[in-house]
Length: 133
Image 1 (cartoon, one colour):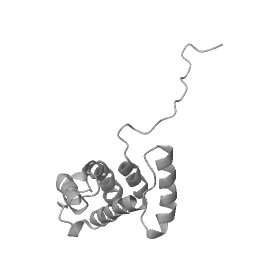
Image 2 (cartoon, rainbow, N blue to C red):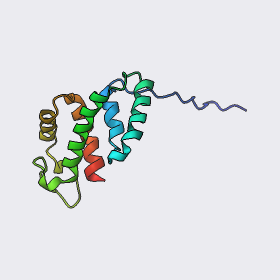
Image 3 (cartoon, rainbow, N blue to C red):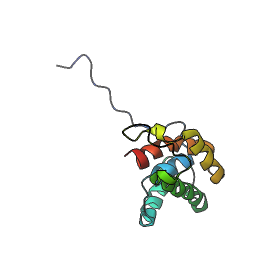
């Protein structure tokens, strides 16, 4: 006997409409903590860029994004020396410990070749990943 409400088939999820080349690169680089991870990251990037039809693997373009990532990682893992760190606002770490808008602005000035939208879009996740966890 068939049920009245059969479970719908799962549809394959595609990348969000807003997914960009820089966004995809940052999604992979988010987990690159050491220069030893570079080779594996490059393999993932080549595959993901090809599968999502975001463009070819451009080593120079990725190096620019990688420099931004390293700079941001250093900024967020050493908050006491950061000009963007407001200080702890409570007993536990919180997103409001950082001046988000100034951090985006500062990173945009330091890395003008990385689109501001990519920096802004990655910032909240980076704070979560590198500071809150």
